Length: 128
Image 1 (cartoon, rainbow, N blue to C red):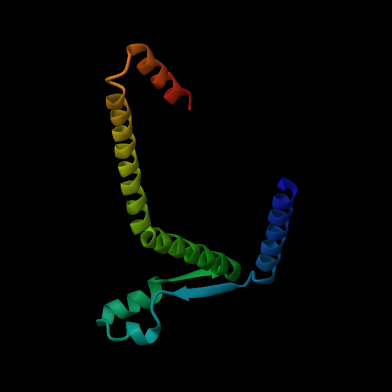
Image 2: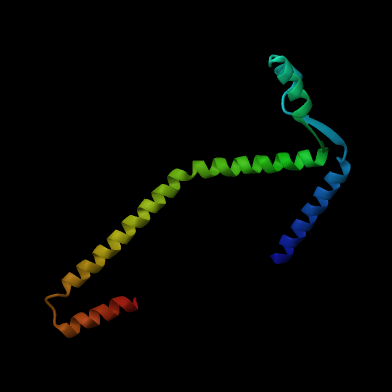
């Protein structure tokens, strides 16, 4: 099974290198399109158009987009599962409370018995 894991990772790495080599051209990423920067005051629109742009290789944009998408998905799923984690925590507390009550009831049940029998009952419970 470990061999298949390493084989899969090797194939994935080769595919990523091939994608990077095929998409190594430089692209310009802008924060805002020119149409949205136009309504800004005069000095701001020029500043946004000139300073809020970055040049990156296309493969970096592709890989960063995949990473951001995964991060958004993980955060979304974490928020979605919050109610399930709360319910599991509550059930765990209830289970601990019920286990303590069972122990107390078993101890109370053995009070009228002979001391030797009560000790044997306790050892039987611990063994199982």
